[in-house]
Image (cartoon, helix red, strand yellow):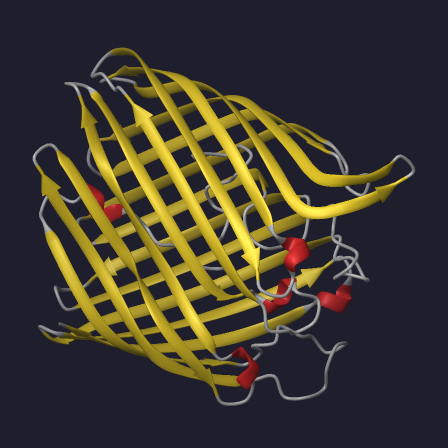
Length: 394
């Protein structure tokens, strides 16, 4: 799904995202690598000064297998990419566990004009401890299935449709289990001199495995989200790419602990490539989000980000990104959050360098700083993490 509808494209899934980009590559590809990953985190428990005065730093290390596969079959293309590993922790051994993120699917051509992308994703990892109230072992298993279809034309009108199913199962926090079903349909219009515009409508149903007591009895925590809006995309030469979306969105939660929402949501993204090896990107959005494992009926999120990527040579590249986000939690689960978060502001700054020592060996070094300032300062914290990854291509 694209844009600020019920399920925002920017929402994280247990902190991991696997892209399906190889499916759009023009060449066949099969890359299989073995990696050793080591991460030092100054605050792996995500606890602030009010919650602990004990050490929270941790060193994590483990093996990982990565896959990047793409193959063309006549007019169709199949792809699979992701990784699987197991990690040990030197201080907090209860966090020892697997970390899996895999995506597979196909790009399909139907007739002379129509196309569809079908994807299936599987994620399994420890829940982000910042959203569990107390640091506990909780493996979250996420499944995500989606189809995006369209019949684009160089000029004129064409149909666009998509649907997805998203499910989270928790090992310990079973009351946080949820599933989301959503669909979107639009009519697009394309002109070479103007780009592409699309009028769309979207609907989503968010179901959480939580019954809420009311005077009328128990009710299930279900939220209906609806959007109608306009999306535009335009490329200016080969250097500038831009897209924007604005919609009127409503959220109707069954939970009396969550407020309804009616208002404007939007997403604007742009990239600029002054030279072939250097890319600048930026974006702002306001979305109604449900994906993740936050223990809420839904979240109103506003965020802005800027990033850059420089490819120095075939061996070396650098990247950096800054993101500022504000989240307003609606319908927080009182079972796990006796002190509700309310809302928070999060700042993330990260950088990475990638260097290929030899044809089969690559080193990656990344750093990440994170700061959270919540309406309830009980949940304030910051952390700094450094990850070293050594890959051997098989």
